[in-house]
Image (tube, rainbow, N blue to C red; front, side, top):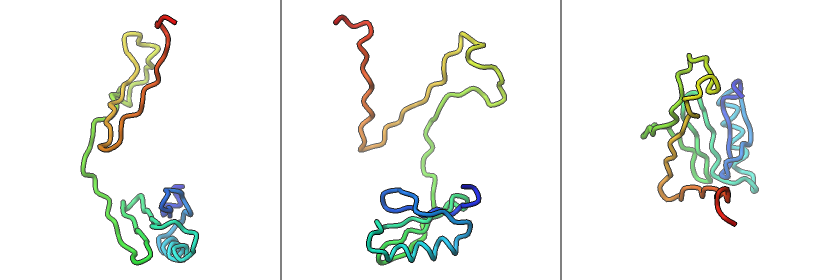
Length: 118
């Protein structure tokens, strides 16, 4: 995928094609946009430049990616540590912070019956 840096996606998030150069990907996306069964808008992503082209029936617009929030992630050991968790019984497995997206409920946790009387 590295040599195919330009990826075209349909409105459902399915990849339709990957290309080595922008011009080929852009031309192909415009041709695909005209096909009756294509789910619009199409998105042509450039992961390296962090920009997209969004193609609808009426427009082809440039979308610049922006990082507007950085949320806490996982509490992992430093990368230079070669020891494993098994070698350090006092250490626990890394934990990740779950940050729900506004408007989307947090996933339900699986309930177990261990330790519960039947």
